[in-house]
Image 1 (cartoon, rainbow over the protein chains, first blue to last red):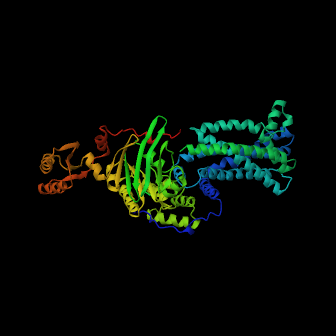
Image 2: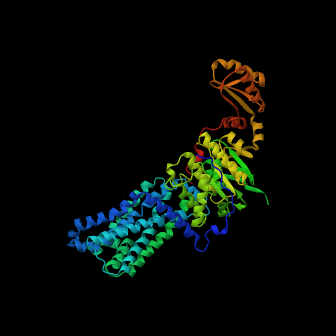
Image 3: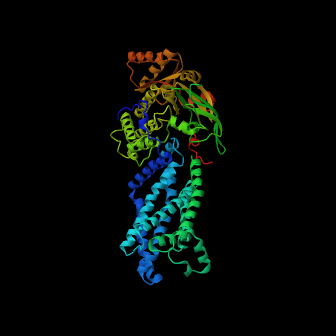
Length: 273
Length: 324
């Protein structure tokens, strides 16, 4: 190996630098998202859960339970697909906490901290990369659903809006996982707990059955559960029905979650020096 | 206007009940090298992490390249490069990707980031390994990449936290050459080390720290005067020559000969001239030796002289979980 010598300290010219014409914070976050995506691509097994799970769940729910719940499998597929899609995406939001916790222990985060970039940029970058995983889940759900007979009855634009709504909701929710991952010494146990909390939130919603078939106390919970509103809005966007009210409540809840947990997560990350 | 690239006063940092820094003053003139010498747990890494804006001090203040640590951390970050004890590179990315990533985060355009990465890969002898994931790199290559990453932004001030710990001697020489060429270009270097010979070889001045306090500082020569001179060490090839060599050393130096390790003879000397005489004497008598060296006192001896107690063996403090 040749002997190393240091770089000459040439004066860089201004043209070497990005002009500040666009928001540097977003550019830094996108550069770091690129890093996370590169890492994901090198570990394709990370995509197993987000691709196989929606397909597997669709098969199980539609063909095992569909006939019993809805009378025939096709009607149940039309009803349950948004639910399966949302459930899989929401569950996959929890993994970012553990992943980031592991990532941060790598020395490279020291370098990020010593660079003149916003402290939140590595976190925001990681969440942008996560959106790729969510988008894959949404796409697989829709495509696999289509193959086994699901038919959206609205427009392409509506379907895209539904996908975007799920994506935005998931992006806001993943900040809870990041925060938990930052404050926990043992991220794995926290993930287990978060998983547990997601069960009543997803199953206790209108995902798999409509609320008016449930006992009163459960119906009351289901009707205030923001996941119900998200599901109903997506259902409306895909197969018709009212959307605006549910979408408003779902996005509002997501916004509140973001407003609370994103600052908490960034603060916890700063402290985790 | 002072000409200090690094000027820190009264830095204090506690971790729970552990006092990592107990009021440290550091002043490094522009373009010079400060060696921060101390055992594990003395507070070296904590000091570097504070000066690199990775930790906030509980008390005290500092300016780096004219930027105040507390009020202008981004200014500080733009002026520094940090190479830690544990290489701060992404193991899943290639060497080139690591450098481009840092360059992009320093706002270089795509084209100039790629160009800068290429330059640095070449200068650090990493061109061949450029497109391999750094996970596959050897320890020495990883250090070089880490240092290259610190230099992407052409910083005025470089922190090297134990740059050679864990490197084999030839890689250590490589690293020393890198440090020398940095200072040739006027970069200010703050380097922590556990080795007096490393500080002696590279630093313009040395600060010895222990228990979070600077317990001695000065030029390497001043420090060596305090801790006593060097010792001349000879390891004869054959045991039968022991008596002859002992007599020779006593004759030349007039000092009693010690045996610090099995088969090794040592005698304190005040300057290097004794070495020449010893070499000549050994040649005349036809005595073969396997080792002949002028040794600086090691860290243990420095500490024993300065503090009257041996250097602490415990290495936990610098690696404490830094959770408030």
